[in-house]
Image (cartoon, rainbow, N blue to C red):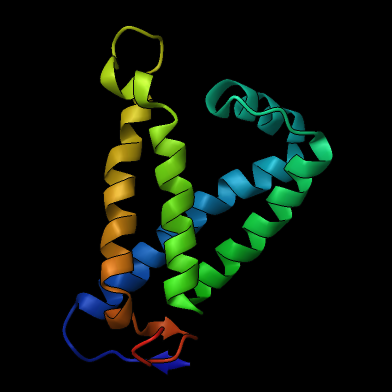
Length: 141
C-alpha cells in the first residue's frame, strides 16, 4: 500500500475524489441489488434494452466489485477507465434531459456533467493518485 503524503495537497485531493466517486457509483451498484426491477426499467427507458432482474442482479454484483477495486485504487487504468465509461454512457443516455433541462420535471440530470468531468480528471491523473492506494506505481497502472 502506498501512503504517499508528500507532494502537497494533490495526493490527498485525488484520494478524496477517488473515494467520493467510488461511493457515488456504489450507491447505484447497491440499487441494482436492492431494487433490480428499477434497473430493468432504467435499461428499458434510457438504453432501449430489455434485461431480466437476474441480469440486473449480476450487473450489480459486478459493479460492486468494480467500485471496491476503484475505491482501493487497484488496477487504476482498468478500474478508473471502466468507471469513467459507465458514467459517460449513463450521462449520454440522458442527453434529452441535458439538452432541455427545464422542460421535464427533473433538471438534476445536469449534475452528471461535473461528475463526468471529475471521472475524467481522476483517470488522467491516476498515476498521481497514490495516497492510501493499493495500486502499484508502474507506468501501465
